[in-house]
Image 1 (cartoon, one colour):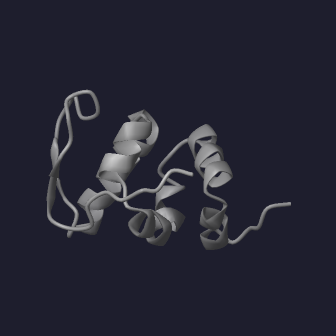
Image 2 (cartoon, rainbow, N blue to C red):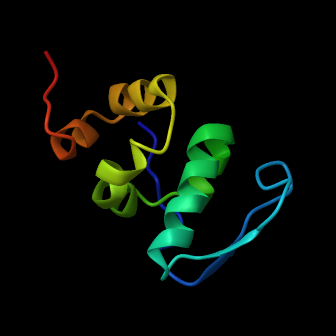
Length: 94
């Protein structure tokens, strides 16, 4: 199982393959910037990016908002891989 142990606060610089247009540095102490960075990584990242840039606790605590910011396929993939995310969305697995 993949463990997400990315940074939890302060500035984070995303590489060009993730943030190729616009903002590349995100301050994780600012919820708006954290959500923006997580959306980018969730939708365009690869496994190594998830491990490097996402933190499991932050992902879980912000998932109710993040799940609305990503497409259905991304949302289903993440909730399928990390069933604990479903606990924070108001629905449980069937």
